[in-house]
Length: 212
Image 1 (cartoon, helix red, strand yellow):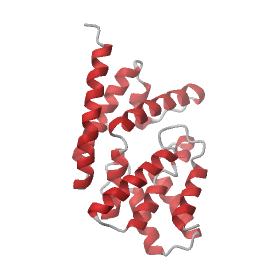
Image 2 (tube, helix red, strand yellow; image 1 turned 135 degrees about the vertical axis):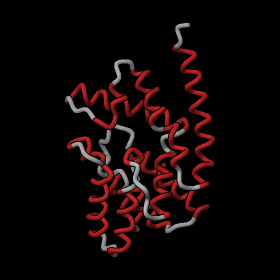
Image 3 (cartoon, helix red, strand yellow; image 1 turned 30 degrees about the vertical axis):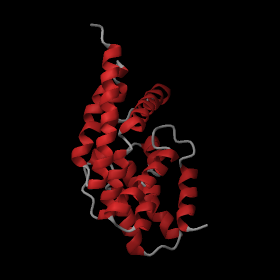
Image 4 (tube, helix red, strand yellow; image 1 turned 90 degrees about the vertical axis):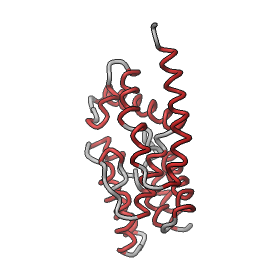
């Protein structure tokens, strides 16, 4: 088993009970999108794949403690890669990509590899899968608040009295701003098609929920 496979197995174990939209299927979609972007834009594929696999491994700790899962993921990734005997410069590179990936923090990636991870992660919030993930995440956050009283301050729209209002607010806060925050031409090509799907869905949703 090579390092990529060992990393995949490690992350799958950590995220086995992840209830929100940062589960293993998201991780593997981001990895796949990273590889497609890298094929057009270049960059160190090994660094990109490791960063993609490990970029959300800290989300379980965020659910438990609050804070920023990007920082937690970077710490966990460093410890894991050190245990695997990886050289320090490569670890630093992977960790940098992870630490700057999160949309809501507005970080500027320090390398092409980091920019590709940012783009791939953001693209997974677009299109049909983006709609599915948004609804799934809102439901999970509402259930978490109901069960434990924990409320994520970065996701206030999830707790709107009317979930439709919360969903509309989320769309304006994140997906519709993503195009202007993508780094690569390859990512923008994918985003254009996915945003068309989202606009079509929202138009249909408005028609179906209008009381005019």
